[in-house]
Amino acid sequence: MKKRLLVATGGGDCPGLNAVIRAIVKRASFEPDWEILGSADAFNGVLEDPMRLIELTPQRVAGIHVQGGTILGTTNKGGPFEWPVQNPDGSWRMEDRSRDFMRRLQEMEISAVINIGGDGSQRISQGLFELGCPVIGVPKTIDNDLSDTDFTFGFQTAVDAATDALDKLVTTAASHHRILILEVMGRYAGWIALHAAIAGGAEVCLIPEIEYDIASVMRKIELRVASGKGFANIVIAEGAKPLSGGMSFTPSEEPGAMPIRLGGAGLRLAQELKDAGCAVDIRETILGHLQRGGRPNAFDRILAAQFGVKAFELALEKKWGHMVAYRHPDIVAVPISEAIKAYNFVDTRSDLVRTARGLGICLGD
Ligand code: F6P
Image (cartoon, rainbow, N blue to C red; front, side, top):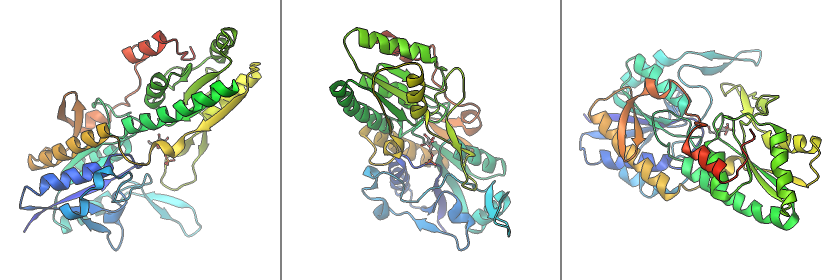
C-alpha cells in the first residue's frame, strides 16, 4: 500500500501556487512508495460529500509552473474549524468540523498533508497539527505579511504588476500634469506599495505602518508644482490610514470570509487632497486582482519550486507542524506556531524605508 500525501491550496490565489504543487509531485515521483492527492478548493474537497479529490501525477502537473492561480482551486472562506452552514431562516452559522476532517483523513489513510496558504491557512494548519494531523505548511501570499520567512512566493510578481502599472501611470501623469493615485493590495502591510513606489519612482507612498498626515502629502505636491513639475505619482496601500481615521473598507457579506474587505483608500485620499485645496487634477486607479492573477515571474517560480521540494522532504522527515521558510540563501523549517504569532509588517526603521526617504519619497509623516 502506498503512502498518501494530501495537498491543498487555501486563501486567495497567488502566482506560484501551481509551481509548488508541481515541485511536490516531481520530488515525490523519486520515492516509489508515495502517491499525491489534491483537495479541491482548500480543504473543502475533504469536507464535502462526495469528497472532491484530484490525483496528482507527474503527467497531470507537467508544465503548470508557468500558470497563475491553482489547478486545485481555492477559497478564502471557512475551513475545518469554521465551516459555514446555512440556517433554515437563511442566516449562517459556523460549525467546527475539525474532528470530522481528521476522521476523514484517517479513513483515506493519509499519512501527510501539505497546506499551501497564508496566515489564515497556516492557522488552520496549526490547529490541525494540535489535533494530531501530520501537516507541513508552505507560506503563500502576495502581501508578504507572514513572519519567519524573508519572502513569500507571489509577492515579487505582485510587485512587478504594481510597478508596471505605475510605469504606465507616470506617462499619463506627466502628459496631463495630473496627480495619479495607484491603490495596491497588501492587506495590513505596505510591502507591495513600498517596493512598487521605489521601483517605479513615485513621489508619495502611503503604507499602513505610517499613518499619513494629508498636510505632509500636500507639501510634497506643492514642492513639485513649485519646481515646475506639475504632476505627481502616489502609491497607496489598500490598508493605509490617515492620522485622523482608520482603514477604508466595506463590510463583507460572504459567509465565512473575513468580516471586512479593504478598498477605497485611493478614492478617499483624492477627496482629502481636494478638501485640502489641491488644484492639480487627480485620477485614481485601483489595481485590484490584476496584481494577484497571472503567471509567476522567475523569482517566484524558483522560490515556489524550492518550497515544494523542501515541503515534501520535511514530510519524509516527519517534521510535522513545521512550515518551509526562506532565509536567504537557505530554505529552512520553522514551527508554524512561530510563523503565525505576528504579522510581518514593514519596519519603519529599515533600510528599505530609509532608501525611500533618501529618494525623496514622501511617506506621509
Ligand atoms: O491576502 C491577499 C489579498 O489579495 C489582499 O491583498 C487583499 O486584501 C485580499 O486578499 C483580497 O481578497 P479577495 O480576493 O477576497 O477580495
